[in-house]
Image 1 (cartoon, rainbow, N blue to C red):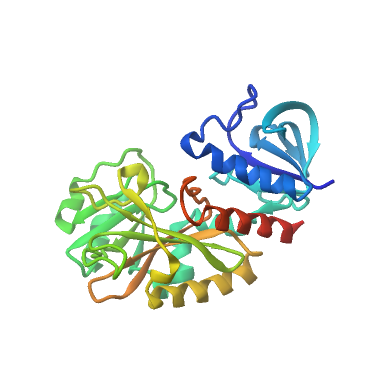
Image 2 (cartoon, one colour):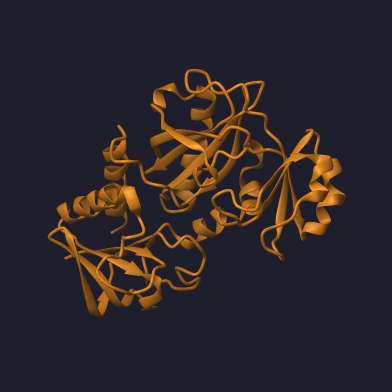
Length: 311
């Protein structure tokens, strides 16, 4: 029997390994049920019990809609990595089969490497490194506003968006971070038939195809559309997405499919005032749809198809 697991960073405690998921828990459970329907034995894993190879010294077995803590070593045929950092999977571990492969995760965790890979589709970007170097580079930015962000940041944290002359007043949340500097893309004209103002349009790609998308809109007075920063999220029918965006999605999806073993990822777009799409970033960690969203099962079934292709 195939043994499939979804891996997180949480400690090996209790019998509620998905207690942190919140309102989207039913969607995660549905994914596990769909995997069970394939005839697989399904586990929730933690990187903290990983012992090397394809073994975990302890896991939670999903059985009859509940989780049972298993203390013995469990060996997995495939692991869906949901850790969110480079602590897992190990860099040189070749016997552990993981979705997505580490090479792809390293790309998505490094915004500078992402830019080098996709510079034709992204805002002009410069490597800053230490924050003190930003003052020397800001004059290269041609837009009035600039974007300064940690090269390895998540959820919109530690980002400066504002006038070039105000950058000198930026105080980082954490010292010692390395940064990139980008031209500001003014998305205030919106996306035709989708939204009328500032936005971040996310396209989720599985098996080389767009399977779900949504638009995030900043809270009033903010330029950050991340949900973690107060942005609102609305599901979007992919048929309404501009053809210029679809063209880029198709090109990148084809490249990534071949180069990174059919990864699961999202592309975040902004449409500038001239109607040109620009990619803000790529992500390998994708927030699941809400239960009531139209394309929930389209997304989940695509995940299962992706898993099946790797077993």
